[in-house]
Length: 255
Image (cartoon, rainbow, N blue to C red; front, side, top):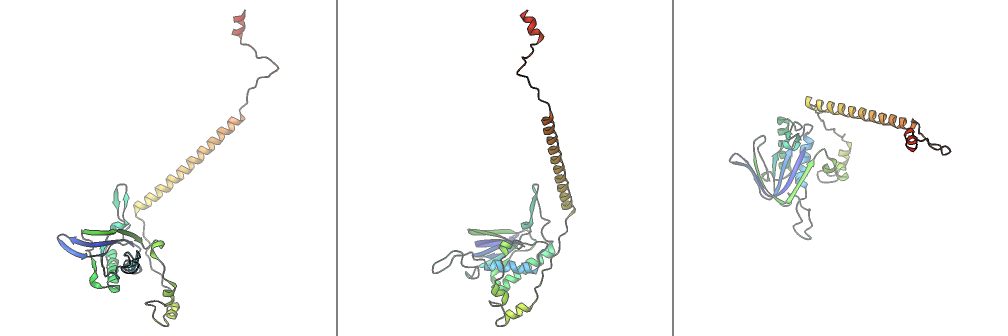
């Protein structure tokens, strides 16, 4: 799952002439769903958005990057954005790496539901999935952060206390033992099947690489042969004890 998180002074989404979602100060989050994403990514996305500390401390030392959107009572606007999985195929964008529409909508709705469950429901707005939307925002800073659930540098790891059950939501006393006794659940991922165009591109790339290697080896062998032939060629030398023989035309000119 890919996210683009923007700190905004305001943001809104219109479908036609109707405003379907709007917020004041808070976060505008564009959400792209990949084909291997599942419920775990949806929960990760909601948690990341709500816990990202994008605002300065309000009082005291006013240290930067100390408060999240919940602490400022801000709003969150989620907008589906399958083009986050796009790339340019020549000059034309290709979006087949994004999840299919039905699966993507289910996970996008899960992101919104998780955020509303963890925050104030009325402060979490959304666009209209699959519709042609006009998104307006006033970026505050600007501050824009790109996240990918497959990038370990951005996903973060659960704290040791949380794993043992010693933090908020750890189940109180005895929660650690209960968490430790539970087997780890593996996320089920669906392996993406390559399209015929992708398979053709991969085969063409391998064939081109093999041809280049063969051509380079042939050039190296030819250069080695040329060097050996040059080293084996005889070198003509002139003896210092015998004077060089004058050509016939030189004798005729003296007489």
